[in-house]
Image 1 (cartoon, rainbow, N blue to C red):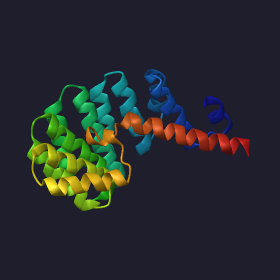
Image 2 (cartoon, one colour):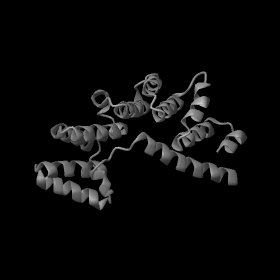
Image 3 (cartoon, rainbow, N blue to C red):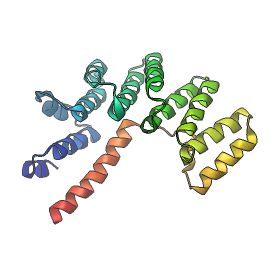
Image 4 (cartoon, one colour):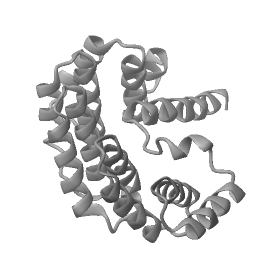
Length: 212
């Protein structure tokens, strides 16, 4: 990937190189590139946060994220990542507060559903199941045909022993769309999972372009 970046010093290749460094744990090397930037863009701020998180430099990670405006889809991603890093640092109450504030801001936006799942899971983990159900109901309201939302709320209702006919109907609808069973347990994706997926998809695309 470094060779690719040397041949084509484009932002996408630069970001891909940094993503791979972070993915394999070369955090200091990634930060050498990132800290030399005069005006990091939003993706580069995200990468700064991930690299610092890998080194357990959580204050620096949060500082990088705080420079991203909490607006639109990238703002929602920033909030999810910020909460994840705060939880990693041991500040789970602070992470929950960040998710709650972010969800209040974005709960009417489909692009922020991952934050809703993260919040619902956090509520479940802390024994606040009624609040988890409320978030799940909002997620289904946002996208009634989404199999993940159907599956998630269906299992929450069934585990609570309420709305059982509706719960069964939702789960059956989700199964027809072949939603992974794992969605029942944790539907929110971590930022590292997203980075790994982005790397694979982009690398395939870049290789095809080079071949052409």
